[in-house]
Amino acid sequence: MTRDFGGARQGVFAPVDSQARVDAVVRRLGDAIELGLLADGEQLPGESDLATRLGVSTVTLREALMALRQQGLVTTRRGRGGGSFVTVPEGPAEERLRGLLIGWSTEELRDLGDHWAAVSGATARLAAHRTEPDDLVQLGRSVEQLAAAVEPPARSRVHGRFHVELAAAAQSARLTREAIALQTEVGALLSLVLADDECLKDVCDRHRAVICALQDGADDRARTLAEACVRLCVGRLVELRLATPGSADGSPP
Amino acid sequence: MGSSPRPAGAGPDLFGEVTAADVAARVRDTLEGVFDAVREIRDDAAALLTSVTAAGRQPETTDLAELRPGLQSRLTRLGLVSGAGFVAAPKLLADVPAWLEWWQIGSGGEVRPLLLDLDPEHSAYSDYTHWDWFALARDTGRRAVAGPYVDYLCSDEYSLTLSVPVTVDGRFMGVAAADVYLSHFEAAVMPVMQRLPAPAFLVNARGRVAASTCADYLTGALFKGPDFAAVPDGPADGVAHGGRRLRPCGGIPLILVT
Image 1 (cartoon, rainbow over the protein chains, first blue to last red):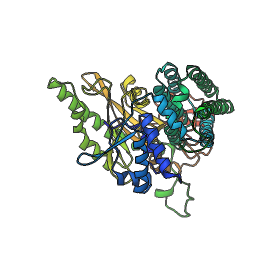
Image 2 (tube, one colour):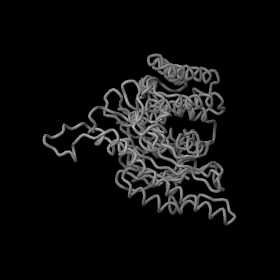
Image 3 (cartoon, rainbow over the protein chains, first blue to last red):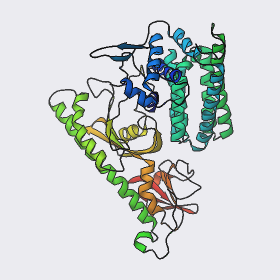
Image 4 (cartoon, rainbow over the protein chains, first blue to last red):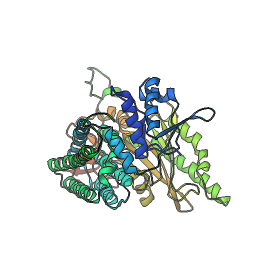
């Protein structure tokens, strides 16, 4: 059975739009592997197919695959039954995730936070007008699952689902797709933030406060709370990024 | 879809005013057509599960492959339906804990399976039993219209999902269901709604707007206040609420507000 997170997985192979295409492809596929969107041992589509779907030239794709091989995330076998396969490397996940984080400059993280806060704030505001009690049940269930999740990757997955559910509660397919794409991008990194129990508790309390605001139909409060929670998470990421040794601010790894 | 001005001198057949009863009938007929297909899927699934059980086996995912030709032909035949299938109750199948035998039709007419990760170790979306299209059919034992909702599990589209429970000897086996994208539903009912003498909208049993010619209540908005639950079983010409009239659409759990 193929792994799929609904639209999130489709996002993995959607065209990349950055100028720095090799890095964009490396980051996209690397994050997807860290997130579990692509499974250990899963065969990637053939080079020309993959290049077409990602909207990059085959040369670019090969360079990206080379970088992924160097990170130990992809193995390429030649000959019959050959191809490129996802490999989830041994070693502490946190160390590998910190490696991923180095691929982000603080400016890129700040911009990601701006984008995510804009989407999350807007969805919270709309959801306050359009939420009925049944939407709140799903959101509440996600918060309690998040509070109870033990492993950081599981925390990150459920945390991402909360944001997707929030966008769905806003009744906007476009904002939901945007939330899914954002979670695909940020999800793996967030397990670094959510690994900290105190931070997890803080995030859960903030999510509960967002739900209360939705319940009250308090649109401004819902937006403010949702934005603040995103800023908290991204702020932690920036702190971690700045504390990661051997990485000059903004420079590629 | 924008509202187009009525051409002068147009005949009443195409452009004349319609009554609320006409709109309710159009909504009913549109979705009853989808329910016909969902009931066929249910019958196919129930027959299949009955024969496997009679052979003394617990069904497996491979058994459900028998449903595919029927699903594919219904998806190709019914323009309104974008996804259809059978969703197994957890633990029904011997080889997997959960399963959607679900097929979708793309914009180019290609029919393809939905392949979800249903492993809770890897996916936060592995449990589908809380979705309305599953829970309502299971808990009430009756057919259900779920939505409008953003279907972030299957299509990322704003959708209605019509479902019926599948039972064998009284035991719940899962649901048969079909997805109708809101844009397609709107295309089916708006032309007749636009011929009403005044703006109107359709809401689901929770007051969520499913289609509207009323700029104050667009699709996805909530119309709060009335007790919608009483409307479907009430009089065919509806009940009054404030200055409005709430009218049932046959046995379909949508309510026309005029």
